[in-house]
Length: 117
Image (tube, rainbow, N blue to C red; front, side):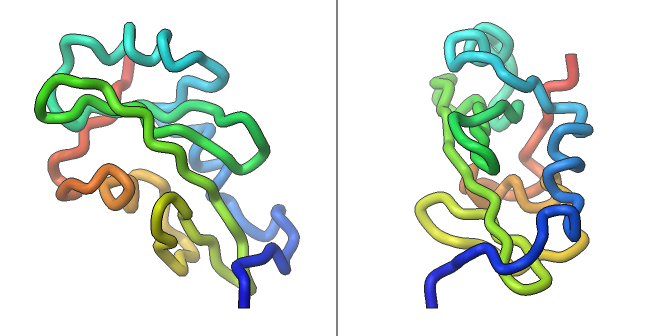
């Protein structure tokens, strides 16, 4: 079975959680994200809007200092949400994005540091 939306969005609060997160920067470009992240330590990240609904980018500093823009998509299935990039992780019900963001970044959770300014 394909991962399809089968529930109403208002049943979930993950997107509200994303937009209320200290690391949310909204509709900024990749270049603007790079300007904000430049000079920060490895795995400092921000979240920004993607091109379509339920699409986001995690822009973060890699250990090399290079800034990566990892696309993610939030999908709903039954009574849970999933985070899709190359792989699908989930199901999640009450988790906030900060609790799972290390997975698409491919690092340990304690290494992640949200850009808060």
